[in-house]
Length: 416
Image: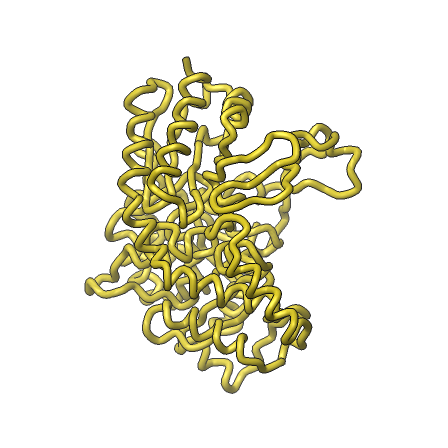
């Protein structure tokens, strides 16, 4: 699917050396398939960059954009119009009790960036704790609190970023968190930012009491808890928000202080993010200036797109659909591990799954070619040895079976 050598094109490709980079020559799509100019139709088992939760060419999404363009296409950040309120109310209706305000952003990175700013303004503290296996975005603050390979390339970043490594590498799962001890030792931490399920860095699923311990520790040490739902939010894990899988110490729904959103908030049909803010934080700004803003804050086209996406998630019960198909995805991943000695372990939650291959012996370049030859798109993380599957939420049982068969065949070919 090579357009031209990336070094010859008049724009940059992200996260890549430019010489020889390959670009998808996309021409359209429908449902769980997208079309390319040179390779034909591809089965999208990755939701592009995890954002295409409603697949491709969705008629309702396209109509919502066109209708909004006819009504109101440009606005100021302080504009008041019906769709803006409607989207905020839809988001807050899915948040835990007590969430009262939404701060709109342009995407997930600056949702996390603004959550960090809000935490500093409210607590007066600049330290933030996160995990080494996390990814929180590409802006300077977000990449500073992230923990993967992108952070060192941007250093020195913002001061106060503290990372923890509470990963059981043998099982590929998050184990008993060290965050309570780190909060005690560090002191003066303003926030803890965590992906409920670590996303592109391995689909890492915490233990049942993990977040109860984090919430209790945050309360004890005066730190705000920020749930980064940018990648797993809006049904990916089988719940509207990923954090809904965990309870607090009293067995009730776990309530963070802020929830950040992006990617699937518009299913990729618009550029939008959001910070959902609990009243105990939001009320601070009744009498203090919220020193945050963006020129394209709550852009009407993005707002209308987000509202329509959430209506579709709700009306078509797509989080429940993801939960129902979860065992099928988990079984397919388990079958790969059982059949292939070079496949080490698997993890899955809803329509989000990962199989770890032995990266010492598996050629991920060959694997990428084998997947492309079978016209299937997934996410490869060669540095971790991971193959990540995250199809559009509207995928059918037959389409999921077909996609996983293609993935299994590609892995078998390369690992033979």
